[in-house]
Image (tube, rainbow, N blue to C red; front, side, top):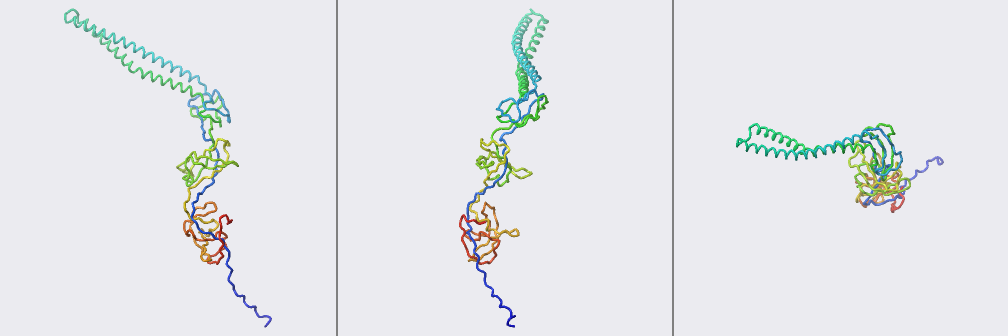
Length: 371
């Protein structure tokens, strides 16, 4: 019995308090940023089209070729348009001559009418003295009526002549513009990107003929509404292309989101020395600043079953406190509710802690690694 008696049961001893790293909850101003990817594209891009129909007579450029504003890019056969201009010029000149002729005829008709009026007056005077017959007076009055009718016709023609001349001038100007439209010119300095027509092709009106790109490059991306609302036109934004960093400016900002993606298109104007069109780039966009918000290290938050908790230290004992989270900014987490400024909480290794646990507090200092 002596040899087989059971050992004495060990006495339970309290666990030693665990050391924990703590920090105070503080209020800070935060300036969050978000990194987005996009691509570079020319700030100016235009599909050039002929405004008249015709056969392509000359193709003077190829893709990749640099052009200056006003350079001739393509030509259409222009014989029909040249003939239309010659005819319109002839009609305009003829109408001007007709107007000048009618003005001269009106002067003659007015003088002839005055003379005939004098003749009628003379015959009336003679008739009263029985020195002229009724027949002679009637013939004179009929001739006066004819003179008045001719004068009225010429006066009307002269009055409406400037309108006819203007109409002929408009036809001539339109013919001149159509002739000019047989030549496709570069509207701005740039590079030819695509050419859709060959010599001998029939170019329809408003058919795509040539794509021209030019100007500086723009960083293009689609962003969320929260980011778009934080930007203003002209704002300076850092952009990195490969290993090179630039400062770009906000050139365009779409206020109304795309109905399919609910994102906003933005364009950032790159410096002139960046020429890699199509390159992938990364921009660091500022968001709305957060003023005097409660901030804790993100490592102090315990996420469990869709809820967030922190361990608050009260008299060297931990209390698990539920909190409502705001946005996260780098290694800092914004709290909406659950704590007050000045509260002390554990800042790392929170998954191994429990409510009511005794701890030995170590103060966290700025710059201490909290991972």
